[in-house]
Image (cartoon, rainbow, N blue to C red; front, side):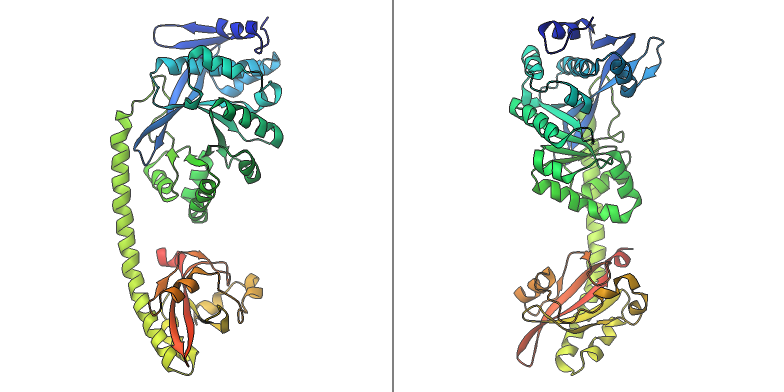
Length: 423
């Protein structure tokens, strides 16, 4: 009968399940045999592997492949969930030692149920690291965030591993149980987006556009960010656009029993970066050339506004340009003067759902960067970053420039539809 893993005899029971041969260690349990496979985690900036995630591959007594859910199903029936979880991580660390991974992190997955049912403070992992002569700073503990782990229990588990010196990662963020409040409370070292995130970003421009903001949010919270499930070159470029730190997926390497060497990936990663840079420069030149025409016409528009009594007449030629949505005037205090002048084409297409936002006379835009930058850089056309317009909830950029009317300073602004601009 297996002994509790918290005891010395329990640790011995774990070792009794191991089978060691010349090149690898295996584990046997209830007629099943488990092996360790490693999948690399690549730093895009360093252009090399910085970690390996240890994954279980197994077969049953008939030689058929089984996955981790099959293993835990058997373990749960026997009341051995925690035992199985710890057996697999003992197995993985044994094999990591045989793979000469001293300069890399090793990522271990801990079952949420093992956190709930096990005594997280029983010093098992501390004894394990001592036994294998492993520095805890080389270990990344990956925990899948699920509703079954209470917030306090999750925070307690993360604190225990951090006190040991390990890094802590929240795995599969975005899989349906994600909780930003937990992230802020437990402060993991790494957040790993699940593969559905990159698939959604590839198929939906709204998701792709918002991904850099999510990554930035985690960075500001002190977390490194990885995306799993990278299967194509295009997905790599999406990850680069989002400024993620690490990527993982079959595009780079499938899980293998022998850890993939840095030399096999560094060259291909460098080639991808070079291609991305060339692509980015090309897109930037195209956008700059296109924007330049709008900026010149907008500056001419500002000159007419300063000369004519009617701002609407002065802006009309510019409003007839394709993709221009509206023009509006702001005083030196950031307050909008009168209603925005809508483009003749765009005004008829405004979504009625946002009608309560249509009246913007008297609105204060002092907080907007396009206003501040115009005030700080007089007489020069400024171009905002793309943002969601409060007028119609569409993505736009705003051109802005200061001007003097009757000895008072004003800022003329114009919104341009960014989604169509980039189409």
